[in-house]
Image (tube, rainbow, N blue to C red; front, side, top):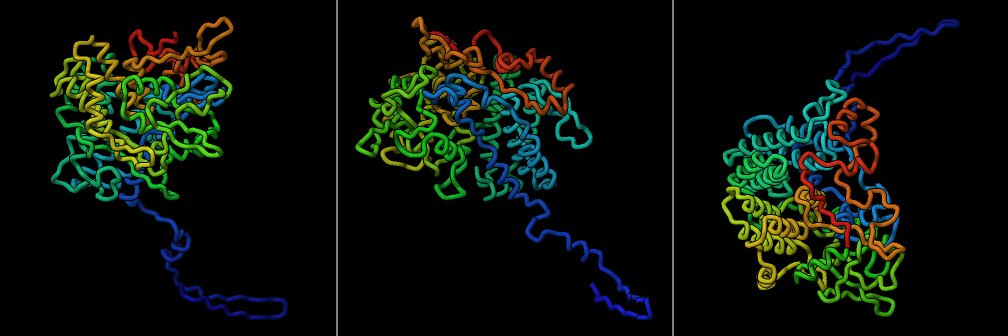
Length: 535
């Protein structure tokens, strides 16, 4: 901007200021309002990396991991999934709309052109991955009218069936569009696969198989179509196909799930468990009874040794706490198993999707008689081998090593062969129970699979009443049952009440809390519940 010159003319009682106004550069004036420390445009690579880093399974240590009987606690108040003492951890959130979904939609709009077709397809895979978890928590949700800005301020809730069909169609279109003839997917800005189009396609088709199988009981013909399409497209089969996020035991780079577990319960080895958490008896007993070589990898008993503790990870020493059975610290608290230092290492990875899941989906599809290019037995055995191999991705923390010898896996399969002569239900239970063990850390997917297949069957009646009878924990808020859905955010009732109430009525549940948490998803059908509640 040019300098201003002022001339002052003074008379008695009067001051006259004459200014000579220069010409002004408006762009330079506008620049004065810009923050030099803020980026005012989208850098696609940064946005994509952020989207991948937000794509791992949500943190749900207490609510779901206790309810699925991975963990147990002797305390009452923290036992949101052990004794179902309160509703903490069962409220859904619409954060996806202004976070992950918005980020990915904005990113797609910034990368037009044929040369970016693979990048846009990967964004679609991540968007659908995120949204399917949310609809599997809460059921009917805004989808087709969502994210319309000022155009649609109160979007309608779509049925879960229509959401699933839309997601599968959109996923299919994205996968068909991917081609090796165009540039890769953000190269080194892709934490999963370093831009590999082939691996992203396997990721997408595995997701398609997961979504297709979700409809196995409610829409079996549709499920068969989509699962067979996914199998033909090519799912994850090799450990190198695994989608996982690496972390490091360095400030700012630590595994957030582990940080939460350590801060909440496992601050130091032995004796200090703030929330009284241990591995559950259901989980430990199953692994001991099947002589699972993953047990010494995942579990430890801290043995008092003077003022310190020593680690004991021998199989014989592991002991789980019975869920919902006590509410005071037992005298033998130190003898119960808790997560190994390998499992809660801050530099350990988080797995988003893995070949073991793909193989178990293939095993179930083959069991149902669908054409997926394998037998149920072969797919099951491959799933076990892949699930065992994934622990080698974890840093070794003495006395635990994630490397499980091939001979140990062979011995496990010999002791626990696939039940080829079993009934359909027996084989489905074996596949689903193996998924429960193999996908430890992805409670949201295990929870959904449990609601669909009703396996493993969990027992929540472990409290001994005054008559000596085993019942569910007294005063629980769920009628002694595991919840089957999360509640819709209360804020939605306030800002979009008509569509909110219409969606609730359509799904045949009320706002009464117990009823709401027991309301079933569209795909959660059949007479089974997945819980015996008997001893």
